[in-house]
Image (cartoon, rainbow, N blue to C red; front, side, top):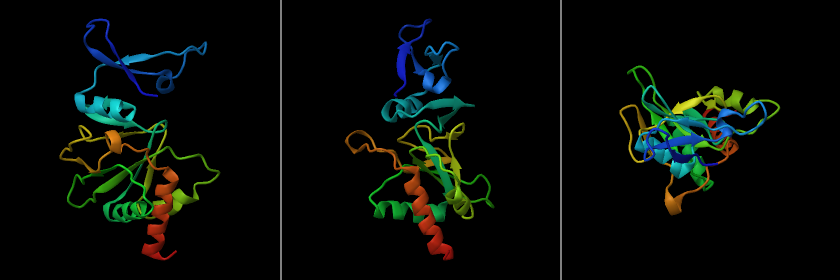
Length: 191
């Protein structure tokens, strides 16, 4: 469900982002409640309007809320390159953000965007992937985004931007990213 824009009470011409009850819960009677947030910067609004991503601002940063619409899986850059190549072999494309290392002795990471991870009885896949530095961000987490889908910042840049217009496609299933990650892991360590 896409958030809608409506004028605020104080300024009828000023749009405000309205998140449906799915993002904020429902009232005690089960009636849908909507909460109005202050207007988002243009780049942040583009994420919400073009892709239907639940966007919020935290400390001046554009953040996406994980869990309902998408999940984010982070991994070291080199491993991420292998995973991206395997996804493409299977004709899948995931938007990817590079999170540049803050210090010279740290490594940059790639963040893959996918459909939310389906619940499973055990997280054996995540356990195996964690040995390669892979982390899954799901429900209840937020992740920083570049200022807009068309540009980056000093810390964040799109490696594979989300597709627009006629090129727009659904996010790949999380399970596909995990499967490609496991295959890359097996290639790297042989088990």
